[in-house]
Length: 245
Image 1 (cartoon, rainbow, N blue to C red):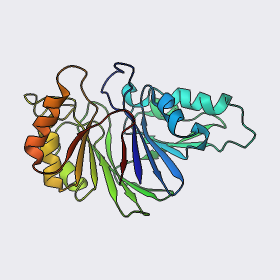
Image 2: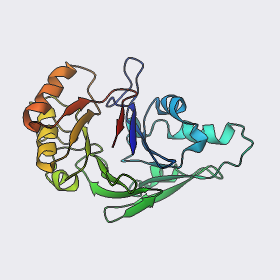
Image 3: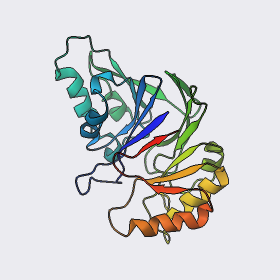
C-alpha cells in the first residue's frame, strides 16, 4: 500500500498547498481519503481522476470536502472514450444535507458508514471510530490485504484514549496535530504531545503529523510530538510525501 499526501494543512490552504487529502494505492486500486482544497490538482499529478476507484470522507468540514464537488464535475465534464463508472463516495449519514451532496446522477453515489461498519474496497478493509469533534467525524483504519499492513487516520479529534486501541499495531499513524502543547483536551483537535502519546500507546511503527497549523514553528510541533512518542519515528506531512506501507 502506498500513501501519497495530497494536502495537509488544517482549516484552509496556505502557501499554495492544500488541506486534507490522501491517496492510497494497492494492487491497482486507488482510494482517496478526504478531499480538501487543492486535492484535485494534486491528484491529477499522480493518477487520472477518472481512474479513481472510491472516496472515503472522515467528516464534512470544508477543509476535508472542498474538492468533492469539483471532482464530481471533472468526471461529469471530462471527455473520455471509455465509459466512466459511477464513483462511490463513502461518508456518514448523520449530516443528511452533506451526505445527499455526494450523489450526482450518473457520476457519483453516496454510501453511508457508521461505527459498526466494515467496508471492503478492493484490497482494503476499512473500519471506523467516532472521534471528538464539533460535527460527526470518524477515525479510519485501513488494512491492506496485499501487504498485510495497516494505516490509521485519526480524522479530526480531540484527545480520545480509544484511538490508541483503534490504531494499535498499525504501521502508520496519520494524526490530526493542529495544536501546539498548552491546548490539551481541546474539543476538536490533538496537541502534538497528545498525538505522540497516542502513537506510543498504540505501538505503531511511524507517526505522521498532519492537519498542520499555519502559524508557529512546525519543527517545534514535531519536537513536542517526538518527546511523548519516544523512539518511534515522527514525520511532518508535506505535499507529495510518499510512504510505502
